[in-house]
Length: 181
Length: 269
Image (cartoon, rainbow over the protein chains, first blue to last red):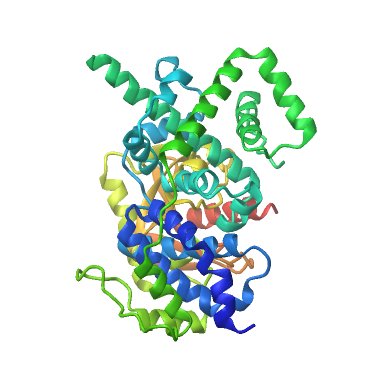
């Protein structure tokens, strides 16, 4: 099989996955298209290195391309500062949440798409990435570990923190609503 | 499962709970989690929240669909298709950051599977320009209200702070017993990229330890490079995956002592 056929079998079937990851890393669909296109150029050049898991292999190239792109075009994105206070609390104290910020499960079920998208976008990228790989791409911990080049223990703690942050934020929004009503 | 020794049993329960939700646990751990939930109502409530969050995510956040135009452009990477030669539409006329031909050429030379850290600094030791920026970062920090962004004498606080901010974290060595207490961390910018700086004190003097990512680098034990700039002493040496630069206005001999102790702490010798 020549490189062109391999590219067709290994890369093309996973473009939606590649685009979804790039969209959540860069924050916009147009930037994501740029990143995916560049990642596919890299993937084609490296097509011989793909062994057994085309999707995880391609996603690793996409995330590395996205980070190079971010470093160049959005140097501040690596330093997500959307909600420092929220991040500090959850990052440093992990889960020791004050009870008033912890929403009931029923409230989480009522969150709307826009709130949820905003909450994900506000996550520090170090937490947003494993969350997207798990919840949107459906990768296993092992695959996330290999895509992000981090140990499985780190995958676990980042995922736990990502979810804790989302829940906390949904709780804050919900509470704000209740206050306004 | 590799877990840091600093986890409390509460944190451990929550990590297990997430792994349980993700079907990543072996049978024995599943039993353990179910047993913990059985006796801990708060944990059970947390699991209900995590379950609702997962439902909400699958309801509201879907996959993107690649447009036909994008598919065609990407199929063309492997050589123009014989079906048709698709035009290469420029989606936006605005300033684009990629030069595709250059990218393709670079990709052929090396398909770089670089991690986030690798964009900074490729030389073994800091360049002149980097040294100037590192010293400037130290000077700015001294002028600011506080020379650090996160204040903590606990490396288990500072390390995750960097990890969350920059997704990279340098080695952090506790030297309090030898008179160089850790006081915090901040982010400096070197060569256009954010890099971690760990802040120590020597009496009332501030020592800034800036770590410029250099993947694959390691401490070979050679003597640090000594430079003086704007009245500050600066010692540079290679460490594991970072090039380290210590800047301070303490006596040069004290800065050397700091670096020697830090390196022996970092390499566990």
